Each structure stands twice: as C-alpha cells, then as structure tokens.
Amino acid sequence: MEVKNFISRITIDQNICHGKPCVRGLRYPVQFILELLASGMTHQEILEDYEDLEEEDLLASLQFAAELSKVKNISSLVA
Image 1: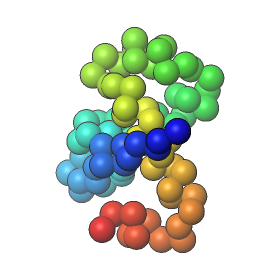
Image 2: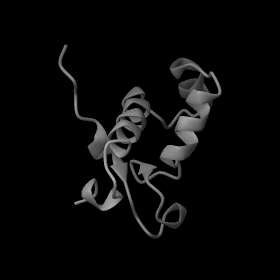
Image 3: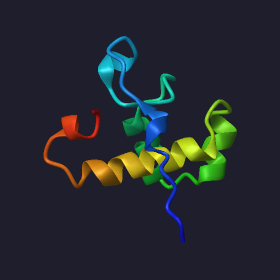
Image 4: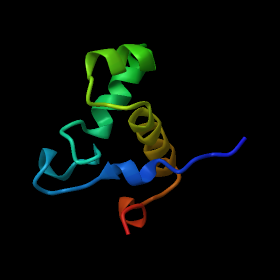
C-alpha cells in the first residue's frame, strides 16, 4: 500500500491561530482535528459538520501527529 504525503496540507502561520499548525491555512488547528477524532467522531461525521474540510485534511492531521511523535524538535518538520 502506497502511503501518500498529505503533510504539505498542514501550514504554520503566526497570523493564524497564534502559529499553531493548521489545516491549509484555515482556522482548524491540527490539535482540534485530533481531538475530534479522539472523541470518536468518524471522518464522515467531521466532514459533515465542517464542510470546508476534506478527507485529505484529516489524514494530513494524523500524518502530522505521527511524524511529530518521531521527532524531538518540531523545527525539523517545518523546514
């Protein structure tokens, strides 16, 4: 199975959500997406509730979290 790279969908901008990693420059922090998923919401439920999000955004958030758990310093992710 090929693993697609969705992490480019995650942006960090000091003017959006105080510089927290967000989805595509929107005001959806990765942390918020992960909290929705952790609460038990399905991808479909999230996409229905937040119509400007896409499936790839959810996957990007998960991929970002997975990559973040591998590194000791976030700056190595945002080069």
